[in-house]
Length: 344
Ligand code: NAD
Ligand code: WQD
Picture 1 (cartoon, rainbow, N blue to C red):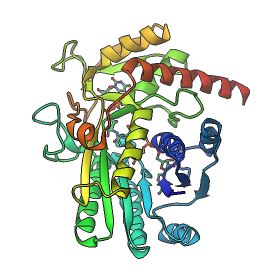
Picture 2: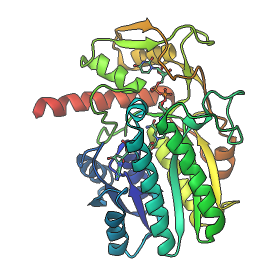
Picture 3: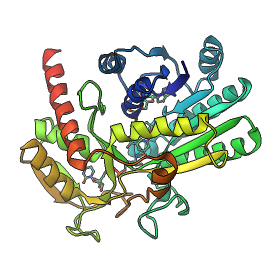
Picture 4: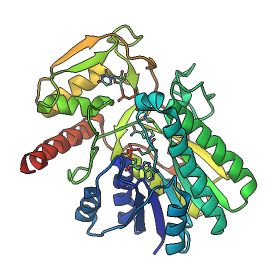
């Protein structure tokens, strides 16, 4: 059985990917320091798949901890690297924490993979590296824009580190998946997004407002160039994103990659406004959302959505779920959390 290491695997995207990898026949080993996730994800993964992944609590930014993990498993020839801090606003307040955590973790992993004869690495990148693109939809060939936050910069630098390392390595291959806006939860409601405190992202803010944790959603900006004046993003189901990781890993394992380091946009390929999201959520949930429109959020771009031609053709990947499916799973997950909270 092929073994794959998931760093940050108890987190939102990592836990959904663990499920898809187990379904695809992999043995999954998860390492996470639980700084932004709960150990309950392991039970959720087991409930969905019937298989409990191995779990090791360790910090990827501490070399000795990750070295011990590689020693324990005699290295890993396949790694999916999710572990990172991801709060854009917090990264502006604590840049060193973000640069240290996100970049040291990647460097440690690459050093250890090199020591253990190389292997395949799939990396969690982000559409944030495109900033506001000059042309839409945005392709992988679009230029990087200066990062609006230290968080965004860690993704840009991480891709540079990967490209430079892989160029000379001969033994490490990599795929960077540039995620657009993954949303929703597993349809079983056994795993989902667990934002700590007040959510920054739109969908958890909407579901928390609908369930009564937040009084109202504030919509940031109504003077953008869009049908209703609100900003446009490319939202897609997290389970579809999880499946993209399985396909990317298989491409590397089966040597179907065209170059040592490849990048793929991963999104629905369709732009949707904030107000369209609100309306779609109201329709699938049957809940009328309390919201107000206020000014723009600092650092926000106006619109972005993906050209996914490369992923469609080369990974044989495209979204399967609709926006409504994804929003319904997000809502079902929020309702499940309410039950869990009331039992505690
Ligand atoms: P998440 O916070 O739910 O998952 C990240 C996991 O990494 C958490 O479980 C956290 O505890 C762990 N972690 C962080 N630093 C660690 C360290 N030093 N050692 C071990 N574990 C560590 O976030 P997510 O939404 O699942 O994001 C996963 C990856 O995808 C991140 O790299 C993120 O930057 C990237 N990404 C996310 C989005 C999004 O919209 N969610 C979009 C683009 C890219
Ligand atoms: C979506 C839209 C907001 C909250 C973030 C990160 C980015 C990437 C993806 C990791 C925007 C609006 C939001 C609210 C609102 N993550 N909004 N009221 O801005 O596309 O990007 O996630 O790499 O780096 O910055 O996602 O969910 O925060 O916002 O009106 O309370 O919803 O202005 O237009 P975003 P988001």
